Length: 274
Image (cartoon, rainbow, N blue to C red):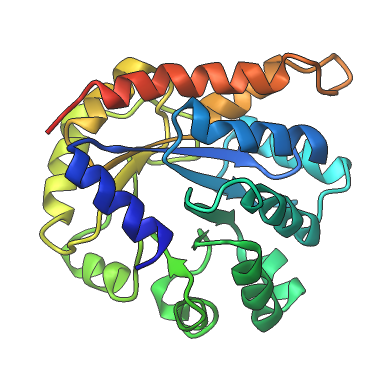
């Protein structure tokens, strides 16, 4: 059982949904990024997604695009991202870590080397948004063989026929994208979310976590009533950005601002019991 499997099983036994948080590795600098990461579990994060900075993040909205650019300008690399996770693991052996992003940085790094190094660093899962099921041989199947969960995205347009392909080699959990468009661009329609989560559960026994557009404890509470997890990303990245100087540099309040938003949303998630 992976850390992801164990965490969702424990939360199911507890009778509540997971809070899945997203930050971008190296934003705005490696030291601050580590402080933010290390404080997430204590603030209420159950699973942590870490964005791999990339120059062409086509599925990301302005906030996460800006975060990736700050990280890249600060010298963030894939090697440094794995070092970030390795350092985090020295103090936290149980919180699941999922790397999220695009295939190009992994391809450049080398798939075999990446999977070996990611596993050694303490990575539990991957979300690679631009690799469809038709390309499973490229990364999905090697990742599964290496003991790393491969997590798929499902959307409001994932119909019955497509769902079979999407879920075929998916493991860990399913990330349901609640709105069409880029991250942070719209507010999810809760009736639509509930209906689509119920529909998709007919195709998989995996937990379904809902993200894109979740910004408040109230929204998180509503989604926690119908899903197994709530994903929050742009709201955290925005809180971090608002703490920076005009030159985009971290301040003493940067980690705390992110952690306060996580704690507030965590209260919303944890207020819902099965």
